[in-house]
Image (cartoon, rainbow, N blue to C red; front, side, top):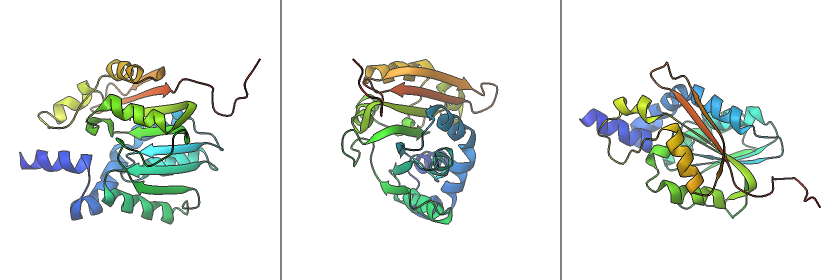
Length: 219
């Protein structure tokens, strides 16, 4: 039982010596396929401002930077240990001129309304206590027509490994898509891959209603 509690707490908010030394590499390795799929569907462009929520070990930040070499990327994470770990990774990769990281809570993001063209979140939704309110907060900091790619494991896939974890919410792909709609997003795509593996890959792509970023009004 102690092992389950440790894993749940460390995956949700890596902390202490264990979190600082081990959780970054563990999260990067376990999230590789999911990060790649989510970034692929998000399709960040060179002039985009991109927010990465819950970046963990920082793999998603590096992947975003590689996908859109001139994009401005900002990451927020609830774990101060992961912020420090990702900051070191960004410096080591010489990306600190256009990739920045800070501590932040999805319930109250430290940004002005309409700041970002694109938002990415991978394997962090399970810990958002009020999913609809959090999604609306994400929409607040997005530009009209901006896109959100949410990557996660389905309840069918992750459920057997996280049974009885408290404060850990699982979703099926269409269930999350419905919640995204309830929060005010348009759902553009629901991608469910790797269903034959122990851990599957789910990405739901949503859009904040309104004019697409950078598109001039017509008429």
